[in-house]
Length: 136
Figure (tube, rainbow, N blue to C red):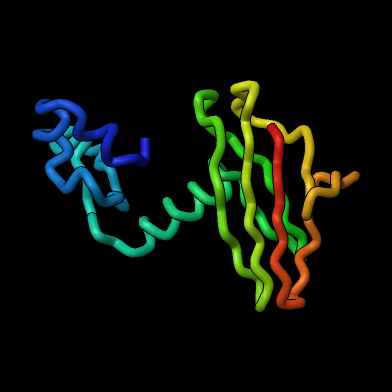
């Protein structure tokens, strides 16, 4: 519902929504006289929430107390994606593989080729590069 593309994918919706199809609206009006119309476009707060939703709830990247937790929720036809994350002076190259076409769930995490018992990564600011492989 928050994606502007869903409000502008046909001419009738474009005429109702009335704002740009490439920016997030802070409001979608529910008043019967303007039902479905977008408002407050280009509002920076709405774009930051959309960014946060994408990173945390789609790509599944959450950092809590120095621990990186990854739990993607993606379309089953996404076979892989990559993220480059900097933590202080360290770089984390994260590759998520989805060979079985899942929507969510992590089977295995490897750090620099070593399988981890826990499905999380303790972040270190030691200037090193870390290769993280995640199999869904």
